[in-house]
Image (cartoon, rainbow, N blue to C red; front, side, top):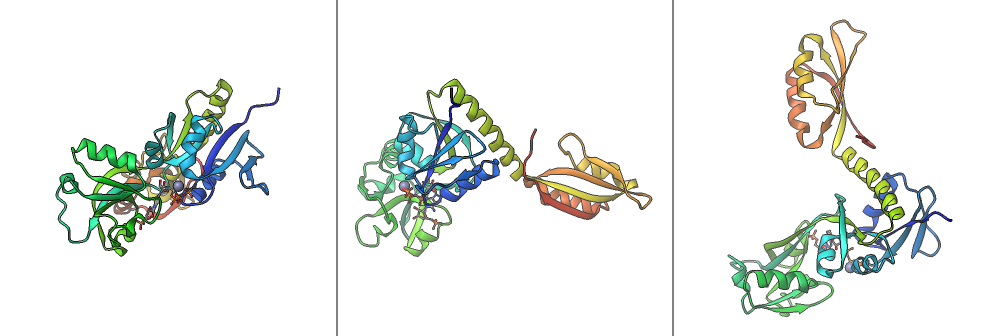
Length: 287
Ligand code: PRT
Ligand code: ZN
């Protein structure tokens, strides 16, 4: 029997496309782009890649047209489909927020009572309004939501924000975040055992890539009399590697540092006499 292939749906073009393709590449999966860009095959992993509009991906995953998919949580929750969250992917993070005209005083959601709000996210917005006991009119539009207040179509909007510059350029201010949205891997809720095993393999690679991105490899020279202090600053995967240098009294120390602790630890290392500090990216990290 031919080996089953895992089918992944990713965005055809747009903000999630490159990140999704890169992630597969970083997982060592080589996707050969066919002439027909609806579907492509990986030649070194049993994976078929489908290119869809992001809004269609939850439905396709629910219906098992694709087994897994990459989408923003904003789309996952708005679509309300029966799909299962698998993993956060760490790119294209954004937020769904209420925005009002600059200068308006928005103290709480009750500001929105009786107002008109333009959005492409009527489900998430309605949930937010219900939770806050607010009665407002939702005006659903599919694109350029940010111009609605300027042309008198709405008093407020509910839209995706990342840098905030779109709001700024349209004379709007962010009033309240209603969802922090990450890009996630989702799956169909009834995958065969064989497909679950393939997904496990893929997930193992994704997690190794993610871990590597959050960590740096560090090499430095340390005076032997300060070695104890320097080692205590460097946790490493097990413990740091220490090698003697050709110059007497000095050692070379290698370790792994978490991105978040990076600057603070580097300062302490220098204060303890570390020299020639090299910091290099890690491609994969297998625990
Ligand atoms: O054609 P298709 O339907 O597939 O694509 P699309 O146009 O619906 O989606 P796309 O490519 O714009 O976004 C895909 C996903 O990327 C979204 O569902 C979010 O999960 C995520 N994402 C991350 C964003 C943004 N950042 C973002 N900045 N989606 C949209 N925006 C838009 C936003 O709508 C607004 O117009 O960018 C503008 C705001 O950006 P700032 O930086 O000016 O604040
Ligand atoms: Zn879309």
